[in-house]
Length: 89
Image 1 (spheres, rainbow, N blue to C red):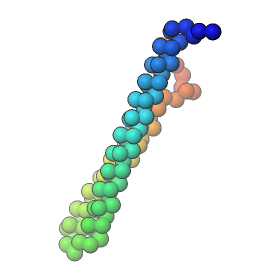
Image 2 (tube, helix red, strand yellow; image 1 turned 90 degrees about the vertical axis):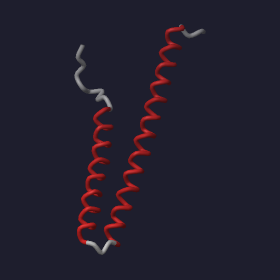
Image 3 (tube, helix red, strand yellow; image 1 turned 180 degrees about the vertical axis):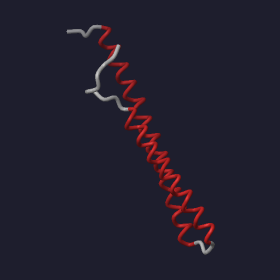
Image 4 (cartoon, rainbow, N blue to C red; image 1 turned 60 degrees about the horizontal axis):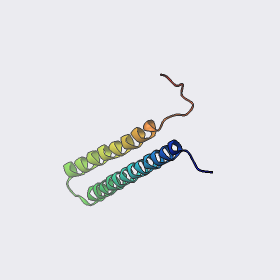
């Protein structure tokens, strides 16, 4: 039995949407990995530095990068639709 053309188009569109979502997730992961590397480098720099103001700057920038990382994760989680949410037209 042959599938209707509309169903094939819907499946094709769904597959394209899934591929786009996967690409977005991969990009988010790459961004988070880069932030993690930056945070680790700043933490190491803070540990080895003998200059107190530099330690303060390294620590502050590290905290800011951690906040950015958390905000990326929160935005991603909030962008996923909730199936149980009431639908509006």
